[in-house]
Image (cartoon, rainbow, N blue to C red; front, side, top):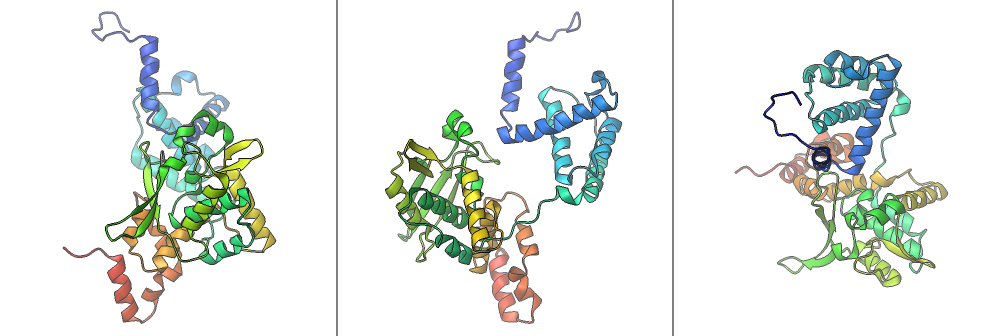
Length: 346
């Protein structure tokens, strides 16, 4: 602090506390992503002889050189995350962000075009309800592990959720913070005013909110009915209210299902039966298309999937089965779909 300054001195402990409070606004997964970008930036500065005094506050030419140097080696999404991470680093330490956003946007746009093909993952294939039936032939109703995996799969599909929201990334992370993952007490069966049953799941924390979100689905008269499979799982595995919702009983005790276990099982099944190569995200995409093809209004499906932005529209643009009525001379179908898709005029 400069002599004569009227600013109240801040101790190291107070500064650490401030940093912890600001850092709490980002999830651990987000911090890991930002940290990876920060590491790449520091390595870049070291390799190019940029002194530590020039690392921050970051100047526009330095950021431009960093992103241009990475273009062609990283995906556009990775570089976008790196830039956002650097911005977050400045916010965390109270540093000015002297960057022209228009130039940054152009750099990131160009970098995405130069991204190597190997950096782009193949697009997920939607999981259809027929595929859920094929998966069912692989499972045994009285097997403790099979029933919990299938219950998780159909729940993810019919609630239009991300598989990771119902799974744990690793047992170590679950042991460290069990309360941030869905528990049996977060699941309930309710009824609406007409007496129709609905399954409600409260996800304690998501990428969008630390307060958690609710997601829902309904019992079905179908072999893939999520209510039936959840009831079967809970009856066989007998988890406690505070256990993970998708925990299964092993000889050494009960433990939660990990995402790796589910995706590995799905991969084994599609390979054995020569099915479409569905992955975890295929369940969310498949659930979305399932409801849209049933005629569920777009806004309702968007609300079910808990989309905040317009990424939901990609499902409409990329799947011809949704747009088919618009591509044919069928006014009756177009009128029906338009009525479902567009909001009412007030």
